[in-house]
Amino acid sequence: MFLDNLSYFDGQKPLIIPHRGGSNIVPENTLHGLQMVISEGFTHFETDLRMSKDGEIFLHHDDSFNRTTDVEGKVKDFNWSEIKTINAGYKFYNSNNLQGNTTSFVRLEDALLMSQVLKFNLDLKETGLAKKVVEIVLSLNAQNRVLVSSFSPSRLDEFLLESKGQIATSGTFRENAIARFLPVKKRNFQVQALQAPFKWRGMQIYSKKLVDFCKLNDLQLHIWTVNSLDNLKICLDLGCDGIITDEPILFRKYINSQT
Image: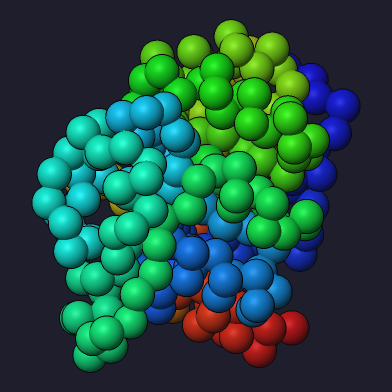
């Protein structure tokens, strides 16, 4: 699928893409994480999208608040007025001896407005988000700094139908499996990138074959979630366009030291 502007992929390669904002160093998918990424001058922010009971799209990974916050319950049972009062970084702060610190969840539109240049990888974590996500991104004229992804083929197909090719997308497990396990040849994917795991259930997914496939099909290749320097070095040796990591500052420092 052809887009007039693919500036989302611009930048020094490989792109260092903070995973959920860099969840080893900041509470994931939070205002704190966004502020860190912006203040540190990173170009990209990988995040996840969920919808509140009253239809607000906001940054959050899980279908509940149990793992990361001071509240328990399913996301679908909370209105945004309740969600915005939750300490979104409660568990992170406690585990890092930062008791008393607080941060909040962020709506998608507010995140996009925090910076006019920060680029967002938006992972759709539930069905039914596509129409609203497209409306928000287009209303803010942010389509050139957004890449939409999903592990779910049905969610990606829903988004492709709603977006009509106006917003860049990356492949699901469906496209990854074809690229990794079938013969390397031209394929008619309706996406501009693949986002593949470094390993999946003990199997090495990132490979020269995957790199060759993406080059042949003019696809950007982003690898997740890479957190060790040893694995980073493998990525650098094989070549990829972006690295999604919980350790963005460490990785940037290492890459800069090699140039």
